[in-house]
Length: 369
Image 1: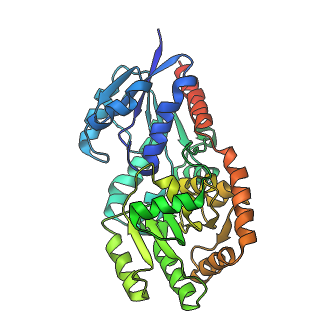
Image 2 (image 1 turned 90 degrees about the horizontal axis):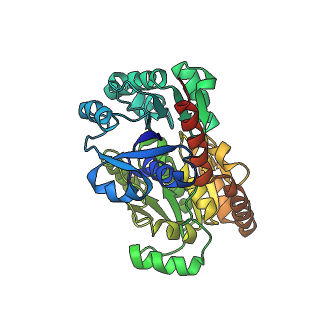
Image 3 (image 1 turned 180 degrees about the vertical axis):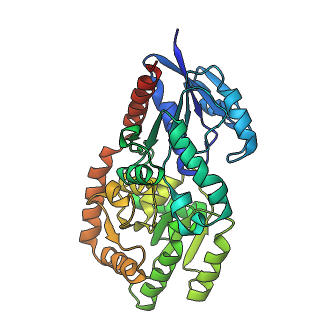
């Protein structure tokens, strides 16, 4: 009788965790080898995962809620293994448990770690998840070190599996992409692109100050396009733009379609990631796959993922951010070198390989007595 793995995939459609969950579920078709899948999703995403799963369980509970503590164990009942792709594990679940802890931002980022939510939920739940699970998966060696040191679990209990990059991210005709981006968003080239949410660890505020510095020195006239949203932090960033005189130079786009995002990457002069904390950094590999130069923070997992295929800067130095941007913007040779190296490096990151390695861990856990 085939063994069954249940995956809590309620994150579908939500940023990096949503991409991670979808590519795991869709990628297991060629790697199951002895187990079937049950996806736990909201009703709106049931049809999305149904072609890849033997069964679909509906759970409408929100994440980080008391309701999910009751609903997820019920949805996973009878499964031989439950994989939760975040630290919000169901504490009442008594079966075999695998958890993915992608990062420790909620206890490491200063804006979060001193909050009541961090002390009452994130800290205890991260520790409980790490101890309750038979095994932990994370997305970078950087995150593994943090998990081992801060959560106090053995290195042998943590596996690093890199994320992949979708097939829709590939080099395209830049001029054609620019026309389609202009039609969709009324954004004219040249523009710099930053993709991610607006939480403090994304460090968009420092990027804005660096852009203002470049414009003041007449070293850049490109528009900055920021794709991401956050109701808590966006008003402050808009006020900062006004103070820096960047009205008209910075455009915030809350979200774009999956079809448009690769075109945005391909048409950009460069992609910039100013984050101070990242567990992996999907925009980094997506940009490289599109053949777009990357200017990137020298922090957390980003140098591990980017290797020699990015221009790095100190994310805590506005002057260093500005200098790195200017170096790439002023040199067509450097941009071409980064494009070439990026396309070479991105071949290391495959969703198929990611799914294969997850399936291997599933089989190991399912074989446990």
